[in-house]
Image 1 (cartoon, helix red, strand yellow):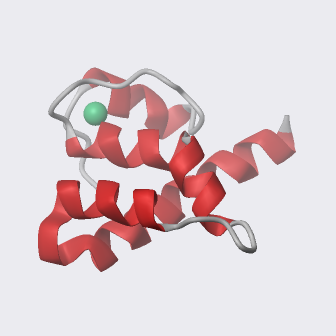
Image 2 (cartoon, rainbow, N blue to C red):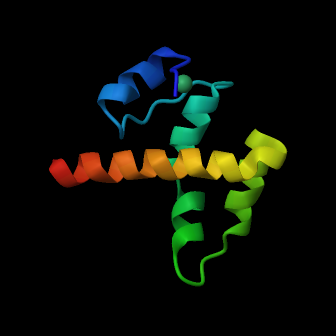
Image 3 (spheres, rainbow, N blue to C red):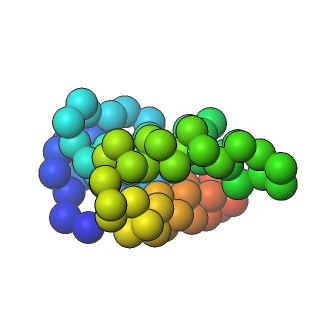
Length: 84
Ligand SMILES: [Zn+2]
């Protein structure tokens, strides 16, 4: 993904960098990947609906593609924490 803001540039090097810029889709994706809605939605029996609503708000009908972006960021974040 091409980065759109300084925070996303930093996150390229530091996947769990937790600063976000309003209006930046890349930041919104990272915030979701780092956030409780995504985490809860992934648990067995967790309520995925708030996460879906957040995705739809960002990506509209393209929410499935947005979900793939969030998954990719979540993987990067998890891997970076495993190394540390
Ligand atoms: Zn950004």
